[in-house]
Length: 98
Length: 392
Figure 1: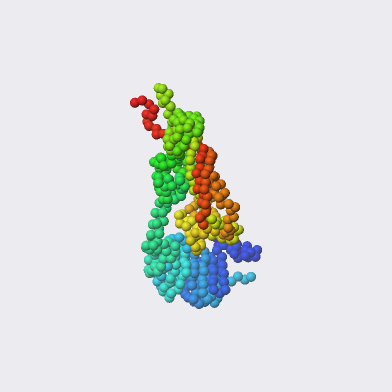
Figure 2: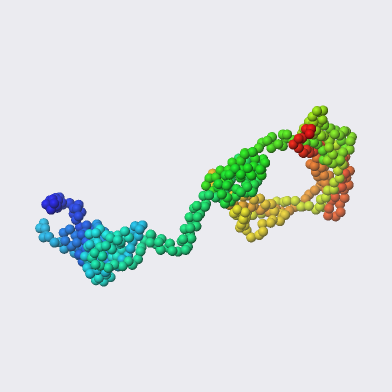
């Protein structure tokens, strides 16, 4: 299965397709530093008013700011509001050498 | 937000992040989560997820507290304690059950001779009125009562559709009403007279030419003795007699007549049922120099059903008054008296007239004595008994 996923990633990368076509690939949308939408997440690993860490397929997305609040958390997506200072992607695999 | 509503809960947990992860793995949706402190979080969950979240928290050793119920379902449930809401719901239910069983409007169809108002008035006496029961309205008892109240009706049918009762009728023809069929009538004198001529088509003559007769004296009898039987008929005859009449006619010396149109005013009123609402200040009573014309427009639904709501438009025409230019008061009085006398006769003419005319300042008087030749017979219906014309 892992092998098939690797092949799929190679095909997408080779054909320079959009990453959205990859299944369960995490997607982050940030609107004016006030609202962040994260799709295809795997739950929350840390939660406070200043930082929310969201697990995704390849690692964690760190949303850092002030007065953060979890507006919605469903199976597919997660919405965070507040004064978002930065959104950081922390991958747990080795970086790809393009 | 579903119809079942949302529940706002406050959860106390040692590891809130882990709790959120567990909830996500359990496919529980979270809305408007607010971080209260390191141990407490407030969030909204669906009411359907409440039992599942309770079980998860119990297993984890966390505590939770229901803060608020949110949504349409819970709003209605909270308001259900209100007397006004309960009362309104009760009234709606009662009306929903009650209204379809009642008649609120009545219409009449099929009438040409009998006025609709007369039928509706009698229908009300029979129980077909505002708020009457639909079942009772359609009963044979009501139909028979209506037939008894209005003898000119041959057949009555009452149908209801919604809250409207329709009275369908069939009127009797003239022959069926018995006005000329099967009647037994005699002819009597309508005033004192001297018989001048008699022409009898039916019945037996009871007077002769030159005879003086009094008012209500029998002239032609409906009964004819045929020996073994007595024939009863509708007597028909032309009896002319000489009559004597006196008349006094008075008119004022100075009269005014209508002149040219001065002004026209339009006024409006609303008629709701029997209640009249005027949209003008005065009493609505016009003086003698005005002519009033009005039109009533009832609000009618598609299909011809008339609602008890009407707009009345009145036009007031104000005229100038002008002096009445009469050439001769005596001549005018004489002509008027003769035309009046002729209008009082069934048929006839004035043979002789002796008149005297005089004026007394404000009035013109004419006193006259007239000898007329006129038809003096009038029909009188005979009473009919069960064994009429038969021997005991």
